[in-house]
Every structure is written in structure tokens, then in C-alpha cells.
Amino acid sequence: MFLLSLLRRPVRAARLALLGASLAGAAFAQAPLHWRSLATGTEIRGELLEPTRAPSKSGAPLPLVVYLENLAAPRAGTESDAAIIAGFRAEGFLVAALDYAHATAARWPQLNRDLAALRAQLHRREWLGDRALDAAHIYLVPAGCRLKRDVVFARDGTRTLALDILYPARPARPVGAVLEFSCDNANRMGNFSLQFCTDTLLEGAATEGFAVAMADHPVPAPYKGLDPMPLSAQLIKAAVRTLRAEGPALGLSGRIVPVGFSRGSGMALMLVTTQGRAELETLGEHRDTSSAVDGAVVLSGRFTYLDLRADDAMIPRYERAWGPRDAHLAVWRAQGALDYLAAPTVPLFLSINATESPDALHQMEVLRRRLDALGSPYDYFPEAEPRGHRVPLAPEVLVPLLSYLRARLEGAATGPAQMSARPSLLPQCPPAG
Image 1 (cartoon, rainbow, N blue to C red):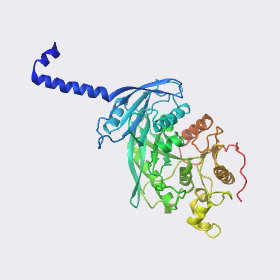
Image 2 (image 1 turned 180 degrees about the vertical axis):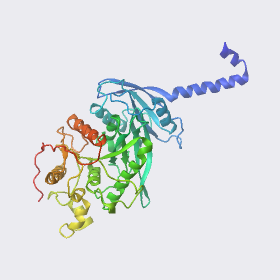
Image 3 (image 1 turned 135 degrees about the horizontal axis):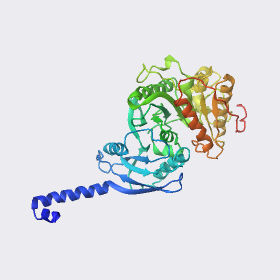
């Protein structure tokens, strides 16, 4: 009767039409969603929520947040899901909220397979394939976490370098942070690169209560395998200082562990081996803040240019850039993160896949021999699953890796600890010719 009375009045009828349009818009703004989980073996239900802020250009691809609710790990952020999701939508994000219903397998390391699968399916348009998504801005966000994007840490000519920080919103206690340097030199959160490398370390660490940050690689695109020094070291130290300076406002403890894979692995190691070198603190933001780190996760990469296999295909490129090695030894030495290491340092976590390239396996062996010679502590857990040049997903690597992060980020003080080195499970590489 109430609706009929409204329809009898032209003005109110017009208002009812507007109300109907609004309700239709609200229905469009929320749609049921489902996704098949590898971790739980079940269908995960959820909803797809449209942004409440229109894109700057009609029809433009949308940035995406996949919001992971009710995971098995304790929730570090105390802010409500409703408030956080509303914030993402107001920033222009399409939000795909997935409810794991506290399934026991919905946490590290099992959940990491889901994180990799989500990115791969989004890349192949097997999930949400009817939506135009901004592949440079796809974030997998555990419940209770907020995102601070585009935090500038340095400027290199016309290029501005920044990082994205995913952090527990209003944590009950300060949390440590994991920092990674992107393997995508054009877009720090490029989904193609992350899914290709099966890189789940940051989002996985976030599900376990840590803050995480992805920083621009110090070298702009296109990447050609050369990390110029001292510029690279100066820029990555600026990223650490900026993350630490941002920390108090975000509930961070100030403890930071970098992780690195492929072109990012040398960056993670370099932060450890160059600690305390004032001449490398001359660029970027927050120069009055410490760039010290509390450890490093170092995966497959290049660490020294003084001990290469004779058949290394990159040697001609290095010679063109730096000159013949024998005649320019100091220049070659200055490029390698490992060659700054002269004394025991903070404990490291090392891993590499058993089916990596001979060059990469050789570099990992050289790194371990140097650490052994110095008596510098590290844990070594190679991945046996034959996955080649990929970030580890095997539980035999991820379980001790999480233990390492907890020890380094939740401990009382920065400094070397007694963490025993593990015997090699890889065949010994022949010495370089």
C-alpha cells in the first residue's frame, strides 16, 4: 500500500524511480563469488564488490584487491573487515573477498599454493576473466591488513622510486617487516612477474602477521643483468630507511628482513654485506634513519663476479660493461654483494631449487663457502621439487623459512645468532675455470 500511495504522487514517483536505480546499483555492486582452493581442497565462497569511486577514465582496467577472510593464522590487525574493505572500494579497487571459514589448511605453507594459483589464474583470465583488471596493481590482502601505496624512497634522475606497504591495521603489538625488491623493473607489483616466479613470500608473510613491502628495483626497465654500483646500494638503503621511518605510524617494530629472488637476491644480500658503510647512505629519503637489517632471505641469484663458471653466458656482457676482468679487477669486485663481506654478519636464510641453472647453483655454493670460511651463521634449505627458476613453494623450505622470519623479526635485538648451517643437499658444482 505504501508503494502504491507513492506511485499516485508524481514527485514521489520520481523519487521512487531514483530509489530503484540506487538499489539496482547496490545489487550490481555486490555479486556472489567462488574459487577452488588447492590448500583446502574445497570451494571458497565470497563476494565481488565494485569500487565506490569511479575510475578516472571510463572503461579503464581496475586495480584489484583479493581480500582473504577467516584464515587459520591469528589475525594481526584489529580493524574491522567492513571498514578496511570500504576503504579499498573508496580508493577505486575492485574487491574480491574470499571467506576461508577458518579452514585449518588456510595458512602458510599450504596457503602459499593458493596465493600462487590466484595470481596464475588471474593472469590467464581463468578467474574474474570477464573483468578488465590492472595487472600492475593486483594485491592479495589478508584480513585485517591495509595497504599504503607509492611511498617514495628515492629519485634517480627523472625516475621516482617507491614502495607499497601491506600492514596489519592497528595491530595489538608492533610487528616486524619483510622487504622485497621487485623482479619487475617496470611495475613493482606486476602480476605477470609474480605469478611466473611463483613469488608468494610477501603475501604469505602477511598472512602470518608481518608487515610486508615491495620496493622498486634500483635498475629501471629494460633490465639487462647489470646492477650499477654504488648507485644500486644507495637506492636499496634508501628503501630500508623509508620503510623504517614509516613504521611508527603503521604499527611496525623497526625490525626489517629483506628477501630476494633472481635479480632481487643480490639486493637482499647487499643490504647485509654493506651495513655500516656511510658512503652508501648519500641518496634518497630519511638519511637520518638507520638502514640496518636484521637478516636476509637470499634465494637464487648472482652474488659475486670474481668466481664465475667458464661457460657463463653473461661474461661477454660484463666485459663490455666493465672491461676485461684481469685488467679491471677492482671494478668487477665492486659489483658483487658478496665481495663486500669481510666478517661474520647477521644470520641468513638460503635456498635454491635443485634444478636451477649450473650458474645459479655455482653462485649459491660460492656464497655458502664464503660464509663457512668466515664462520657467519646461516640456514640452508634447498628445494628438491623440480621447479627450476622459481621461488620455493615446498613445505620443507617454507616451514623453516617462516621460523627464520619469526626468529629475526620477533627477537629482542639485532645481531648474529647461533643458527647452524645445514649440509648441502645439492651436488657440488665444479670450480670455475
